[in-house]
Length: 60
Image 1 (cartoon, rainbow, N blue to C red):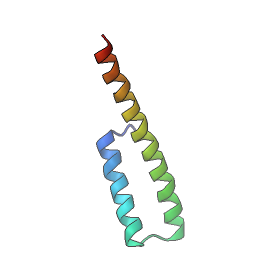
Image 2: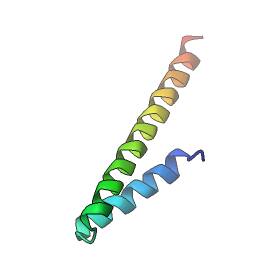
Image 3: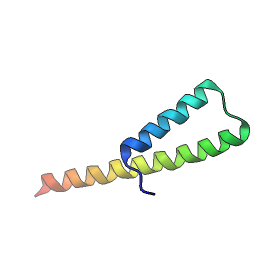
């Protein structure tokens, strides 16, 4: 399933909220941290791609 930047950020904010509430079990914590890492990588890639696209626009 493809997820857009806004949805990824929204999910990350939810994970951070859960971490701050300290309401996760150890098993849930591990899964949430792994998911957060995936979402961060996705957001970084989308930002990098957007930056490249913008640079390409200004080079022409």
